[in-house]
Image (cartoon, rainbow, N blue to C red; front, top):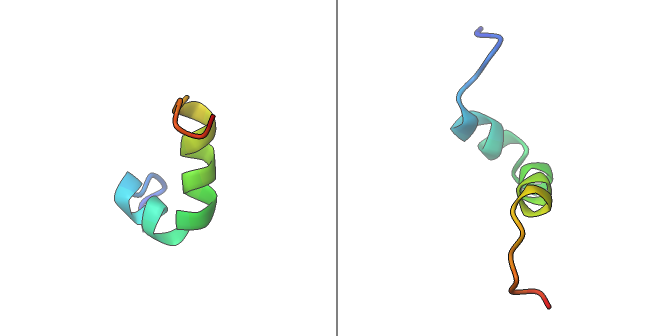
Length: 32
């Protein structure tokens, strides 16, 4: 087991949590 799994795996595992972090780091002027 690698200590640094691919981002895809992380997203697949923590899709709900990952999307939230991504949204936080990615300013999308779509909500406002």
